[in-house]
Image 1 (cartoon, rainbow, N blue to C red):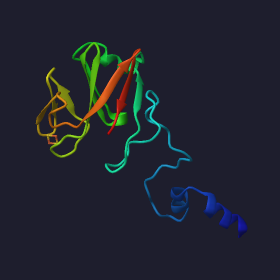
Image 2: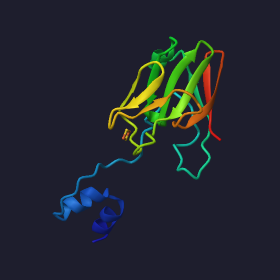
Image 3: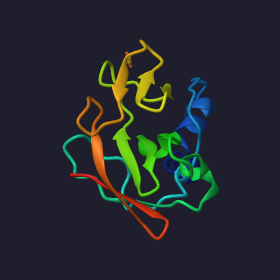
Image 4: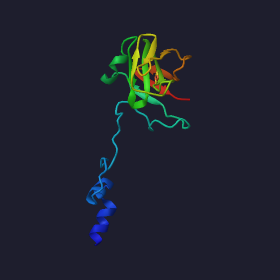
Length: 148
Ligand code: FES
């Protein structure tokens, strides 16, 4: 009897449900893995009411090679950011949440504006446009993005 109690206390919930004949779709995992090993950020993407910690990106990392040339861009989904190289000395960072309905994953860039592929609304790469823009700084090949 004690073995059964011990098992129920320590077993992953889906295993317990499966043992009881209740189907459930959920993975068993003792810990979550960090999906963003490239950049350093001391906290996950916060909710809209929390202040977000700065993100520091080593631009020599090959995963950011799209940002090497002026006009290069990427949807950095691990941090919910659109990044675009404006000049040799400037990379802009925007929240990748579409102002229309908040989708984050389907963007195209034409050199001047981002177009969300859900309903094809376009947004300027200007920090005075509709996309939420964040402060950036490049120093010694390191991009720092700060959030107010
Ligand atoms: S959600 Fe982006 S254009 Fe509609």
